[in-house]
Image (cartoon, rainbow, N blue to C red; front, side, top):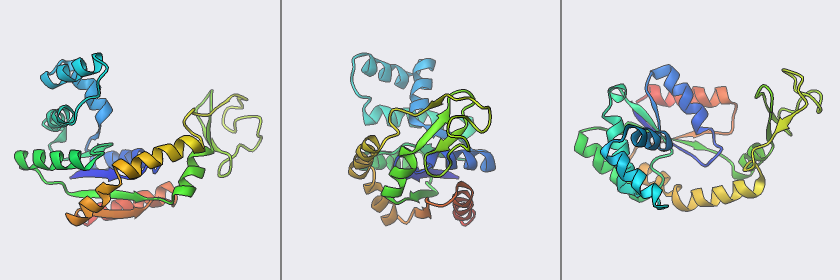
Length: 216
């Protein structure tokens, strides 16, 4: 089973990917993780990437595709994998398709987590965590019973991520719609896109994703 998860930042792709990994025993492939692993292993393509990064340059699409190509040739990908955060652009999607064709592989499905932008901004901008135990909270949806202390461990120290605010989220959304959202139409035209409502509970979204995968 070879999958791509699509959706704007904060839509829950990482969370749903972990459920799929657990149920289907296929790896979740993050471009960041793959890049770091290739550099650490000093593979040919990893050394190319390191040279670019050391020079302060962006890693080019052909290098990223090379790293993905190396990774999916590994044994743990023989039964499938989930691509997380890649492709991001139409050019990358074309290159990925060419690479799959060269390897004789088939992309089984692209799952799009469909969300309401305003609700998504509200969901992300209100998040905070306990600095001590990591328990997650939200200003509106899951406030601690005592606003001064964590329900789990009693700590009074809370942390908010610097990018969990409305301005940053809307900037990230604009970048997503400019660069990545065109992939929705791209994969729809190929008959590979399946949409899932990403605004329900985590368990409901997970069940809906699994229903899509059962029908493949």
